[in-house]
Image 1 (cartoon, rainbow, N blue to C red):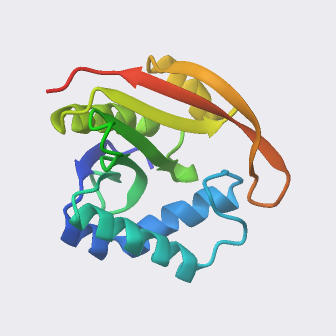
Image 2: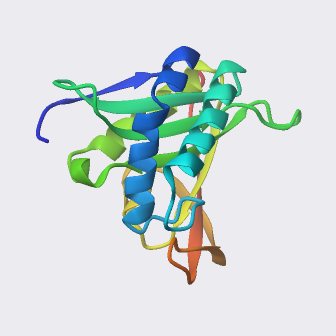
Image 3: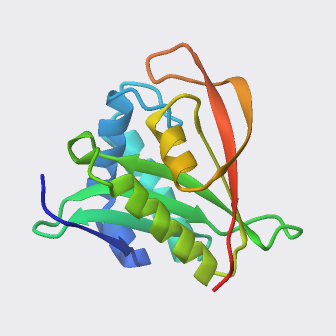
Length: 179
């Protein structure tokens, strides 16, 4: 996989149509050891149910779903979400969630491209403060630091690894300008 990568925002219909492809990325990440809310083994049915809920959130305007695809094929190799729906006293904030890159596409700038696109989409939606969390010491943590995110703290024993055992999480934020 050395083809150029294209980042695009999925429509609600595309989000529903791409559930299988999105599940493949999620399952690959979980089976590869990523602590992204799921325990191993992650079944196709559980992954599909998760993405069905995400597609509903996209249709409701509560979130933006971005994907990375090889330009020479329809294969989705990464994804990230911008969660727009926030409490009424935080209309300026969005959460970045489920930044996932398939193991075959890692170390090619896919994660950085997805994050740039997520920040741009959040700015277009009028958001000025972004928040995310990631496993402490992970590739994600290094990616976010390189992208100018500010580390606000570490929470010990925040979640479990997919095969068990606690992992810490690092919380980040980034101030951006609304478009």
